[in-house]
Amino acid sequence: MRQRIARALFHEYGISVDDMEADFPALVAGRRRVDLAIFTPGEARTPENLQRVVVCRPEPKQNRRGAVKMRDYEQAAKALNRARNALFRKVHGAVPAAA
Image 1 (cartoon, rainbow, N blue to C red):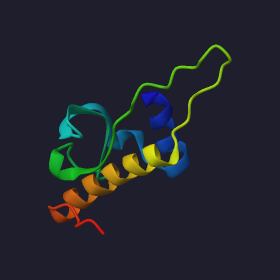
Image 2 (image 1 turned 60 degrees about the vertical axis):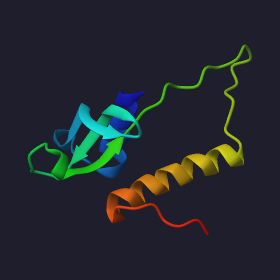
Image 3 (image 1 turned 120 degrees about the vertical axis):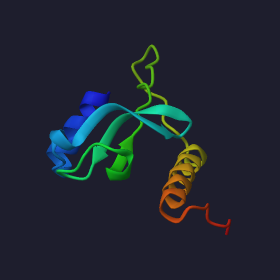
């Protein structure tokens, strides 16, 4: 899964492989390591130069018919809200007030 994500970042978004590092030690989403860390181009690989992180989850298992269970709207909205709060906290240092 991680290799597929790294390949997509390289081919679709033009992020250099030299600016990526696998299993970088950073505390994100309750994990001590992130699957892929993306750094500022040409800079040292330190937490201060970290631009993006990728946390991969295992691929969903297929049932006997080969179908994968997809998330419903509530599950997707909850995941999006968690990601939005994490990004806001990183940028502004606090979580936005609920609307």
